[in-house]
Image 1: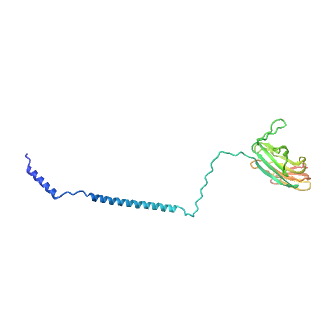
Image 2 (image 1 turned 30 degrees about the vertical axis):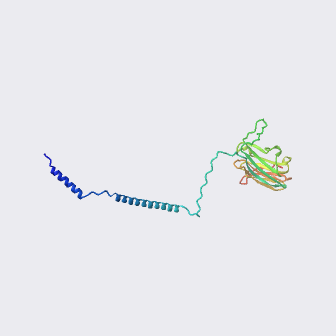
Length: 256
């Protein structure tokens, strides 16, 4: 088949006329950039408004949470003290049994308990040559006119070894103590280390007077005592001890 060159030329000429009748336009670059800049400005403005609103809301929240300047802030709990493994050495525990004035002299009686044997104290030797038992020390400090009874025997002369805080061998003793003639003359102190059920003691004198003394116990122990002062020249006719119900438990007439 022979190509029709006339028809081809006609088609080319028609296409050329159509292109000249409708010229192509360039892309609207300026318009596109202008629109993009406007959208960017709107986004920045919106972001600024949102940020300002957020800051304002945070400020209002802080304003509501912050107490007025004149309000009293709640007290803070103190920090717990730092733990320490240091334990202080146990010292003596004492109690004042009784005190007063007799024959113009101040007198007092106190019990002093040492949980461990003090440095410098030596357990006494028993008649059979053995050492007296004891892990602690109980001292009965008695003073008349500022002078300690039995001070000539040294610091521990008025002490006895005991085992722990509840040694029964420290109970049941009754004694008359003084600074002269082994307590037989001058101002004297009657001191009892009674059993647990004794609440008080009563010392009856030959002139008809009576001296009453209450039992006092060393805290944390079973060691107790009551004490009464006997004036010079007075004779003791009886020493009685009673329980809390005023029932007489002992009656002793062997004191003068």
